[in-house]
Image 1 (cartoon, rainbow, N blue to C red):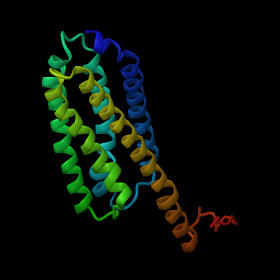
Image 2 (tube, helix red, strand yellow; image 1 turned 45 degrees about the vertical axis):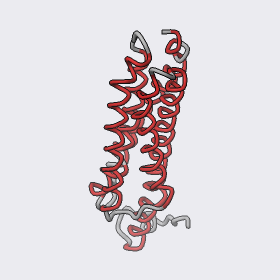
Image 3 (cartoon, rainbow, N blue to C red; image 1 turned 60 degrees about the vertical axis):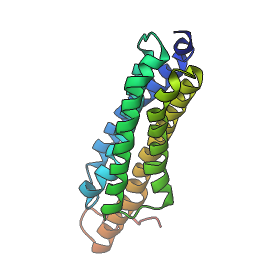
Image 4 (cartoon, rainbow, N blue to C red; image 1 turned 90 degrees about the horizontal axis):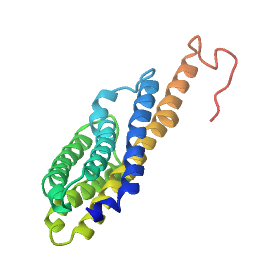
Length: 195
């Protein structure tokens, strides 16, 4: 179909980015696992796992769009709608987990990027099949917008999680080690912690 063929480069770029970022997220999580924060297992289902799910949804969506469908409506009606509906339900579950966990108190930015924007993206996907038959061009733009929203939200969330771990958790751990004068801490070795 001509309309889907025009989106070829877009989904090659977006899908490749999502796939690469999934791999990078695994590397980062492996490095963080050396010194996991207290109660990390409580916060992971609310903050870490959804990032991989959103990257995976973008990768799946990019693959689905590149399947040689007869029409945009055929692709959209079944699979985009199911992915959107499942993602919306999952995002609501994530919001509940964010609210219930007590390892970290989310702020507005967390709610927006972990719940609000992904929910909007999944709702766009869930509703796009209803427009696909009558407005195939517009529905493809909605699917593209949903893919970008998920990709950029997941990038933000991955970066935010790493930054929190590095600048907050590790700094606290180093300060605690220095204050206790444990062997191996910077202070016990004559080094000083930077403020």
